Length: 154
Image 1: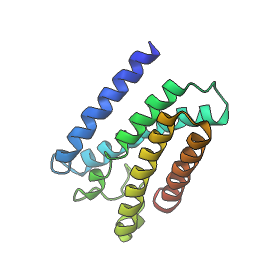
Image 2: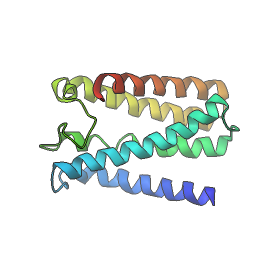
Image 3: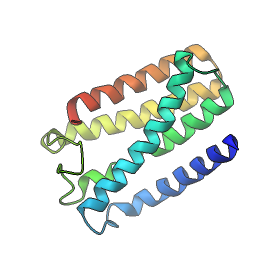
Image 4: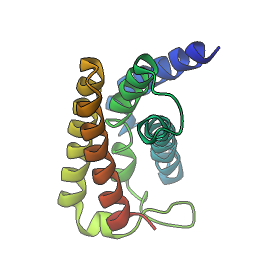
C-alpha cells in the first residue's frame, strides 16, 4: 500500500514537472498561480519531512523509501517557481509569501536554483547509499530551505 502511494506520488511529480514548462502561461488568474506553487511546496515539504524523520531517527531508516522520497523532492523543486512570476500572484490574503520575494527577485531565483541543485545532490547521495553523504546532503538542503523561509515567507 505504501509503495503504491509512493509510486503515485512519483508519477504525479513527473506529470507536474512536465507540465511546469507550460504552466507559466497556463494560469487563469493569480489565485491559480498561488495555489499551484502552494501545492508544489506541500508535496516537497511532505517528502522532505518524511526523509527528515529518518535522518533524525524518529523512524527506521529505509534506503529504498528514502531514495524514492528524494527523487520526488528533486523533481518537485523545479515546479513551484512559475507560480511566482504570474502577474498579480504577489502576496495577499491567500499566501505567506512576503513582498521581499519580488523586491529581491534575483536572490530569490538564485535560491530556487540552489535548492534544485541541493535536491539533485541529495538524490545522488541517496543513490550512493552512503549515510554520511545522505545526512550531509540533507542538512545542506534543509539549511537552504530554512534560509529562504526566513527571508521570504511569513
